Length: 422
View 1 (cartoon, rainbow, N blue to C red):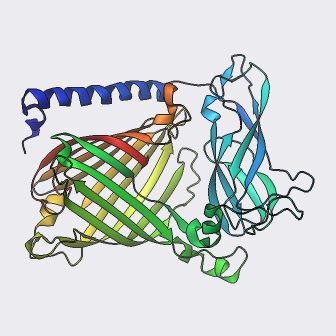
View 2 (cartoon, rainbow, N blue to C red):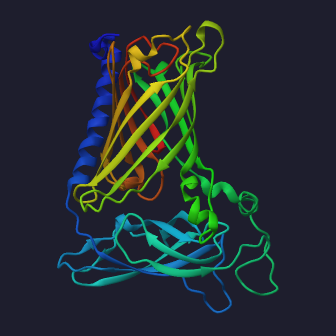
View 3 (cartoon, helix red, strand yellow):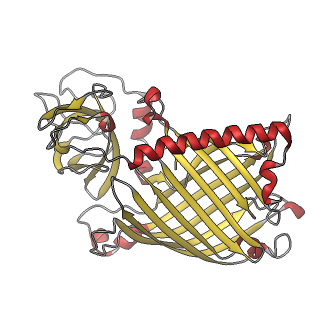
């Protein structure tokens, strides 16, 4: 497909493309203005959850705590960005994430100049988090606080009395699924509608990773075999859905299980580097078809990952990935490497609660391939604040081998939709 195909589809296709581009540019302008502004930031003091009389802190149950916001500036500071706080809980060899939400909305509330304000937050403790734990905020600077939680027992409440409450179905399910703590997001998860050429180019992707080992703190295994905790299983599936046809068939899919080692923290001792590590592993990729429509290959790869904190919570991530083909199908896709190449340069820049751009660049013998993704959290828009926890997501792909069935065909595709992981 020629590069100028985007503007050669007739009057209606052209108008549709103009509308999509206008929407993306509007999001870009709004998000960029929000990201590049220099908001004043308060100083946060975290107060650990406290027991109250006979009420104990129980794993798997809601818990409340307070945060003090101190404003060292003469101008007031808006508290709206602090309506949700991502927390990190650490203890007994476990490190889990939890989201705390302000008990009362912070839409227009401000901390007065040179003043302070106390706010209450509530979060659900993950199951099986009994014992002594530390709590810290992930996205904002604050102190680390300690608290103690008792074990979760189905049918018991936080009140240590004869009262008995029936647990929710979710609580019972979590009680029998202690390993879900090892499951986490991996690559982007999205559902995107094709805009140009059209709905026949719609796509969705799901992805997750699973940590195979999680040893107890202060155990022999933790001390001597901690490297095994960096071994993961991963799974990613990208499907290409023709929503324009009457039967809405799936045109093709990519099934990508993998086994990898992830070293996610190598401390370089440099203040301008916010994160450094690497990932290496083995990945299979196939489209699950038979006969001459079957496509499959395997990769061995390594990917260093480095991130920088630039300014105003803007982070830049660089993750070049190189691979070699292992057991590539020499019958149905013998020349896949000519189109997909041997490397992918991934870059990502954005803010945790704002606009984010991600790009992928590959280059094979047949030419380059680009993928550009832009996302913005819908709940940061004024009229949807605190309502819908998804990202508005725009994607452009130009190049070869986005799918395996037509890996040797060049595509130029623009999509719009939503994502829950970006």
